Amino acid sequence: MKKDVDGARNSKDRILMAAYRQFAEHGYTGARVDEIAKQAKINKQAIYYYFGDKEALFRSSLAYAYQAFREVDQTLSVDSQAPEKALAELIRVNFDYLHRSPELIALITTANRMKKHSIIDSEQVRLINEPLIDSIRLLLKYGEQQGKFRKGVCPEQFYISVVSLLTFYFSNSFTLSIVLGRDLLAEKEVAARREHIVDLLLHSISANKSPL
Image (cartoon, rainbow, N blue to C red; front, side, top):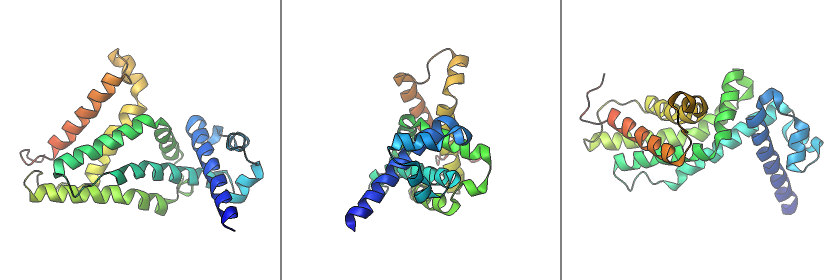
């Protein structure tokens, strides 16, 4: 029985990884179940057996991608560091992950473009991302108590700002590189942008800065 369970889990993981890449590269409409099955080295019918249909497969792929993204936060300890240092590290870790995983941005962009509630497992995605928002809330509270951060910073708004700054850079790097006349994905440029975002976000909540 355990062998069957492990085999099923392994098959589903291969399908999700292949689907993740296909949906990210070709979008929902362009992705082909036949190609996903080929890349996963599995029978096409197994995909329908495990996931039902293409829409459910996209939904599971998005949740799979979010889960992998959020696992990077588990390496951080928000209790053992000064709040400003921990928050800076949280931003850097998430920035570096998105740098390594452009497929995630493509997948999220596809979901937003479709504007179809059924394409997302709302509860699952919310629960996957909740720990990050909780960590931000905790760090903002610690920083406020220690006089490092100004009072009344909204955790949800700060979360949106973090995600916006991180994803915009990578989703628009091609056109921005043309506008600015330099390769924004070059190692030096990426490192400079990461530290600029950290500085910008921490300065915006500094106790020495008055709210707008």
